[in-house]
Length: 144
Image (cartoon, rainbow, N blue to C red; front, side, top):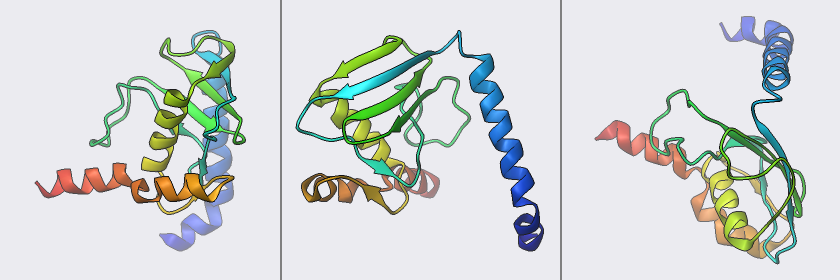
């Protein structure tokens, strides 16, 4: 099975990408597309999981298909992009405060498996103990 996946991954990844792209295009009038501008001292962080769902109704402990999505991607320490089903951000450019940056960073880190990326050592050290918390919560829930 692993060998078959390795040989066909080019096709599968193309199909996944086309499907996601079509979904984003077809829902472009339903969702809000926003650029988040961070002028605070706290930078956005990134993980090898480039896009995470930060919608408040998404369960932190269960892995189920979410009804809603706020697809968040940090682009740089100052700029992030989000596609919202919720009304949390308006379409266009939004300035964010430190509370929002902290919330988005914590959700990004909780869904990271191993690595997080930031522009200062302080921000990495402050968040490193939270890496993979969503997956740890899932494992605890499965054990109960």
